Image 1 (cartoon, rainbow, N blue to C red):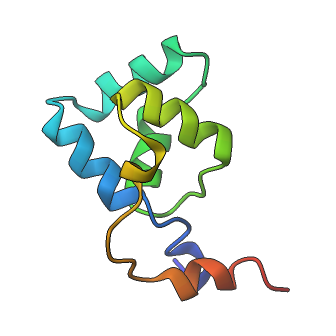
Image 2: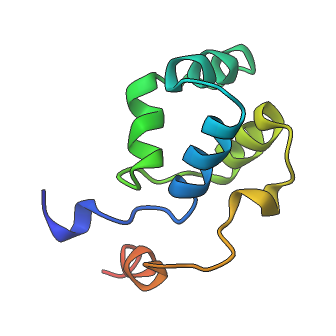
Length: 91
C-alpha cells in the first residue's frame, strides 16, 4: 500500500464512531444505505471508515440521512491528515 492509498477522506473515523454508537455493524449500515438507493458494500464502507476511499457529496448526504445527523456532524472537530487528502487533488 503506497502513500497515495492513505488518507482519502477525513470523515472515516467519525463515521465509524457514529456507526458503532448507533449499534450498527458495517453490514447493517451498508444495507440501510442500499435501501436509500446508494450501492455500497460492507467492504466499501470499511474502506471509507479506514480512509482508503474517497467520499463524494451525494454519498455524504445519504450517510447523514441514514445516520440521522447533520452533514457537519460527519466532520471531525480536529482534522488530522487534511494536507494528505488535499494533496490527492494535485497533479
